[in-house]
Length: 156
Image (cartoon, rainbow, N blue to C red):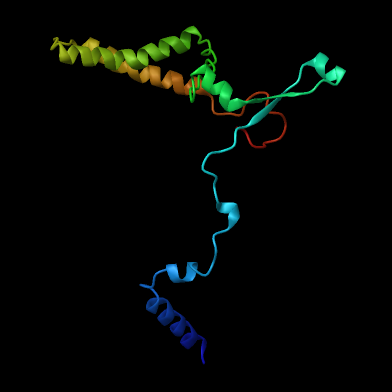
């Protein structure tokens, strides 16, 4: 047989068994015990030791974490830690943010209120937006941090 005829035969077998069910193959193989999951998980036991009791050789008390959680009544409740404070901005950065959002905000309010806009006001609003954007991009900095050291390793 040629390699091409072997491939053709394999494809014919695949196509012929396409609609066959997998039940007949899996019935011969038992389900592994490691895949069985118990109905109720066993409670996690926590060992509580008092420093003076441990030194004296006293017996160790065990407690169930499940019992402790049920007693508190807050099962499944998670409260994240408070976020870190925002960084302090200097005056230039604050003005750039105000200009970036203030220019379009003025134009939006003026358009919704149907105010008659002078040419200088329109120019000032657009210039403030562009100036704020440029100022933020220039101050952003695209180089590595100053404390990165001599190597160019991965920076997270």
